[in-house]
Image (cartoon, rainbow, N blue to C red):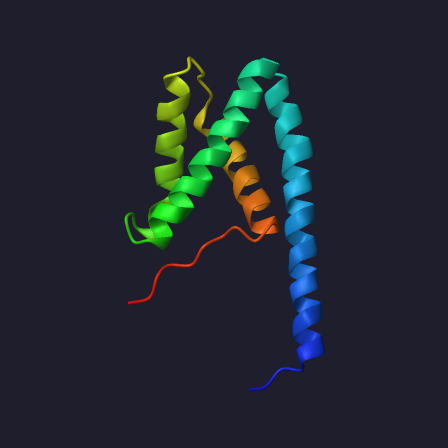
Length: 118
């Protein structure tokens, strides 16, 4: 089945816009909710941890080091470990919001990797 390239381009643009909108909504509402419960310093560190862990887990999964389907659980485990070493304790739900925001931001800039074939 051949799809008109103009339709495919339009669909890609719609998906990119939706991902951007989702990232913005998560950033606005998720961070507002977290700010009311966490100090600004801890919040910045938590964001950085989530971003670094998401990038690392994505690379590990793409290279077959960890199971691609287990990325979410692995990211949650790693952010909690890194944060604990810095005295930051958030709930799993709070971390999940941070991870989702980091994933949405990564996808928005095209940083999502695909598993290696072979």
